Length: 248
Image (cartoon, rainbow, N blue to C red):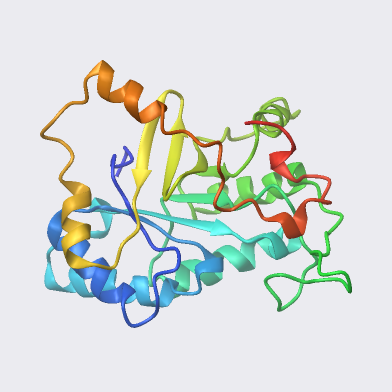
């Protein structure tokens, strides 16, 4: 699939035992974009739903746009390929359409998703995300992923990456949180990724192409802004690459 579908199904906090059925229902409802991550610990269940619908002939692999993300404990260059390969296998795929650096911050490698010190703060790694990006670029060359991007990077971090010497592949996305939605910023386009495992809501969330919002509607929505982040990750506020020390 060359273009990213405008609406995707989010799988964050979708419990094993629920997410497989949610994915199957979503495919039947017309979803072709699925947002996953190692940290969600449900990629095998997502893959089971995808595999079921491809075997039934409802969709072909080329019809789908599957996204996953590199977790912070695998930022070291030598760990990136293994982390990506693990996700591809869990999803029962041969490749990913898009692979993201989940956060700009590297954490101490190991089995724990959140390696804490005695004060309860996450232990950083000394990896620079520019080095991580080089290993991410290698995944494109290997054919494990078709496109690459980032998530939760601020504009200064994005600019630093774009200005990196010898940049081989530019990021095509920066996935950011927007209230209860995740969204991709692609140039000026926005792709929304609502998450639900409730059949009624899964269906409702994709029925968004038969109306338009007026200028007043947009102004009313903008007026709801409370400058609030759901995923501020305060346990990493001391990290040199913590992205939320600036507004955007």
